[in-house]
Length: 292
Image 1: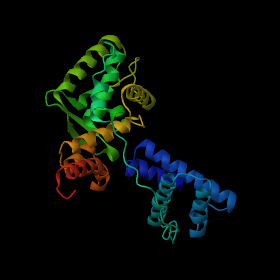
Image 2: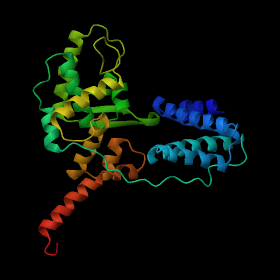
Image 3: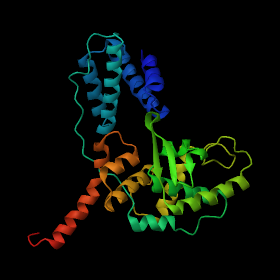
Image 4: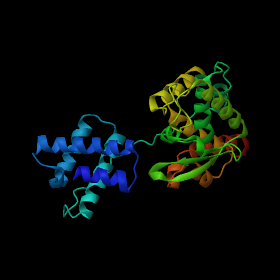
């Protein structure tokens, strides 16, 4: 039944391969626990069995967020089994998620971000312009790492200054970008077309052999440049997405517009970025209000 559920996620719900793999890992771990501890299979699990697994994860000092993700995986799995009439009772009904500390998103400060992009060490070749374009796209559009990797050249409209992004569950959105990014894209394309002989994939960002770029390559680019010029603790591609959203809100962007730009399905996912704007408002209040 696990394979049927994963096929459902992949082909009907259109989840990304990364998300499907996460579900696969969570369910495989749970199945192994049931087999070794109770000699049972997931379809015959009870509330007590599920709860004992969660307790074992806590005892292993696994991060609460990771445990909650596993709980979410099981909830989706058993809802699927109920719809398929493979089980009569959902063992997840009384299972509650663990309390977690609300983590604020890491972001790069505006002066630091300007220093990163104004760096003069970018070389005037395919690799140099590729590194600059990766940073400019992630910060200038707020797209996800997976969206950047899958981005094709024909999704970029230089004249309209827009990028058509295919996000989670194949949802499409159009993101505007600045005029300065047009020049970076043009320089990159000239260098790429001049130096990369095999480029039949159609993807915008490619390796030196013309194949589609891969996550670790993007991670290395972002980590190196943020490490050289920024003080942010985390240095991942997602930090630039956080930075994009934070800077937009700090400049007065309407939160619903930022939600659409990021491709969030819920406003709650976007509201996490408002903490920075609120801190600025508090400072203004403390400095200006007579009773502050």
